[in-house]
Figure 1 (cartoon, rainbow, N blue to C red):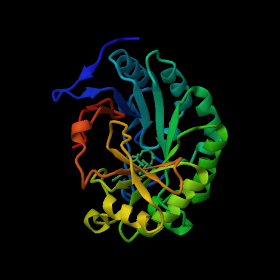
Figure 2: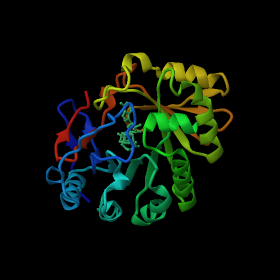
Figure 3: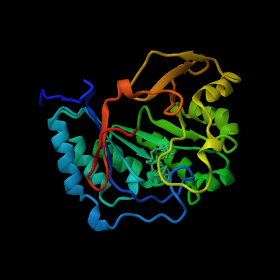
Figure 4: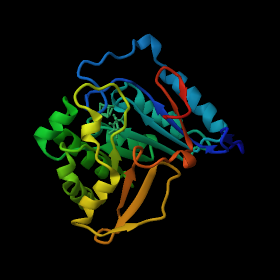
Length: 277
Ligand code: SAM
Ligand code: SF4
């Protein structure tokens, strides 16, 4: 294991790499993509071998945590084999993945067997029509089956990610909380960011702050501020009614988290993004 450390120009220790393994997706979430997306030609995207070699180099330079994301990582053929190779890198503490959950019914077991440590699964609505409206091509029941398959396969500390949009799904915050509590899952509420090209709505009209989310949750639960941190953008709270789960808030619009940033991103074309801002 190397004793090397990557430090950026602001003296922040960079020990977390997020890798986009594909720009493609089986969903077209209204806050992320347009309906008619044009994806990169295959000749421009990194091969699985190239992604592995970048991961290997970062781990040799002190990276301790890698997250595979996308697009939808689970629609890239060969992704389970990639997980197996990256998870085996000596020195890597955690290999995580963010997924929309659509493929988990068949892949949860192979993924846990590959050595993947943890999953974040996106879930913005529990109402079938609204889920279809927000994801355009997603199937709510398939995603719920995927979440339950991840639990059955034995994944621990799975986290749900929910992008809250004013007038769209803000009325479901406490139903999503109930869903998380019932399954003993952590949950994070995310403020919509100006990422991705969209045409479906104006982000100004759908902005719903983390503070507004907390006020909604406080109508039904007792939130207790926690000092827990993952050196990232999430701030965590616990619930008096369900102390096992963590409730996170990712607030890129209302709070700057640049000072504690510990991550860099690799795009599927092989560009390194040192800062999202
Ligand atoms: N397809 C996977 C998924 O949806 O979980 C992984 C990639 S997706 C880009 C990663 C996370 O970013 C998801 O939780 C998604 O909800 C969130 N996300 C996408 N576009 C966003 C936006 N404009 N603002 C805030 N979060 C966004
Ligand atoms: Fe696909 Fe994830 Fe973007 Fe939704 S948020 S369109 S699931 S990449």
